[in-house]
Structures are given as structure tokens and as C-alpha cells.
Image (cartoon, rainbow over all chains, first blue to last red; front, side):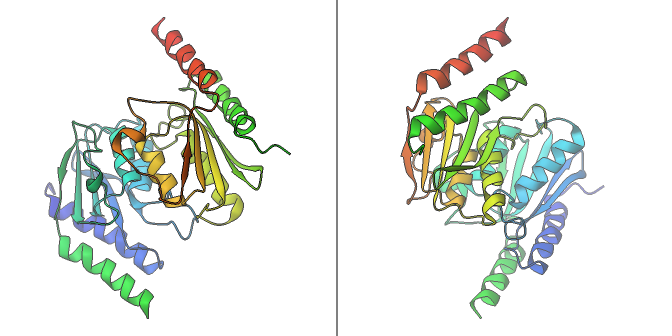
Length: 145
Length: 145
């Protein structure tokens, strides 16, 4: 049974690839409950013209719909890039069991603002960081051309 | 023409009343562009079973849909209670002209985490604070019964 962080981060990366294909900043996320993916999302802020349509937000909403419960206390959020303040705030309200991210985001990642997650939420970073960061570099180097 | 904070906060309060009637934590919000309300929202986290369904998030999404633009640089968000971290983060991405709130929220308001809004966003608080806080007290005293 797939229980490891690398496996689920690969699934989040597959979501990020969808964002890249849609010319969106390539960030993807999945929410896992009892070793099963119950929510997926990729960044769609351009298509939806909505700053709230981050990968994490869409995945959290999908997971809550699946469980019929706004609290995701037994769920883990996997996201390819360190979440922003908004997504950390949503994770706080969802009371997630864990947040697992790929690459650091020093500029707009939430960690520069201190401890924004719920005190019960574990935080792990650096999972498949190189692959997660590479997608971002690919996107921004395409944009610069 | 209605241009003052008290007028638009009264509109946000009308949204909060809808939340109270629906047995939701009574917080309401409106987004104003050129003295016109282009987005409305009230807290619906219970009905939608979704922690992201805060008044501000729904109002910001509605405003972006109206303008066809995810950036709300000439818009002001009015909200009855000091926004949380998630909603402050969404306001950051929207690059709002101003955030105007009613009553302080010392426990889960964003200000305890420092400056989370965009540096171009003005912040004003304490507009119709008593009326905004009273709705919250009314809700929580009903819940305790």
C-alpha cells in the first residue's frame, strides 16, 4: 500500500504538470485520508481569474466535499511548493494532521510569518524538492522568453 | 453618492445578518469598486462544509468574476470582523486598495501575525465595531443555550 511521502508527492507533481500544460504557475496538491487520495487540485488562478484558486484550496475543498466534513483532522495535504499565507490559513481551519510540501518558497511561503498552521498539524518539507522546483523554473523561463 | 465607510459597513452587516439567519457565525463582507458593490458574501462554512467559505473569500471571488480580473487593485473589502490569516492572504494576492473591518478579532484575526496584507493595501478598523461585535455575541450566546 502506498504510504510514503514520495508516492503522494509524485501525485501532487502530476497535478502540477496539469497546471503547466494550462499555462498556470505549476503547483499541484493532493489530500490523503487513510492512504487514499480524496482531493486533488492544481493552480487555476488564471483560468478562473481568481486569486483564491490555488492548488491547495481546491484540493482542501474537494476533500471536505468527499468526507462531508469541513474538518480534515485525519488528512494530510501534499503540495509541491511551500504554501502561501492564504493556504496555510485554510490548512489551519481544516486542522489537518500534516502538511507536506516539496520545494521551499522563501518569498511568499508562509513560514517567514512564523507558525500559522494549527498546533496539531505536523509540517514536513523538502519531499521531491528538486522535481517540484524544476517545474517552476521551467514555467518562469518559458515566461521570460 | 454613498462613499463613506459606515454606509458600506452597513451593507456588510446586512450580509452578516444572512449568516445569522442561516445559523452560521455571523460575518459578512462586500467588495466596493468605484462606490459600487460588486461582490457580496457571508460566512457559509457550515452549509458548504468548507473552511474556505468565509465571507471575505466569497466576496473576493464574486468581485473578481464581476471584473473579469483576479487583481482587485481599485477595490475595497468591507468585512464586519477583522479577517483571519486565510482571508488576509487572499487579500494580499488580490492587491486590494483597502481592507476595512468592523470589530477586532484578537484570537484569530490576522494582525497578531504582523503585516500580512499587500504593502499597497490600506487598513482601517473599528467601523461600526459595536454593531458588528453584537451580532457575534448574539450568535455565541444562542449557541451556549
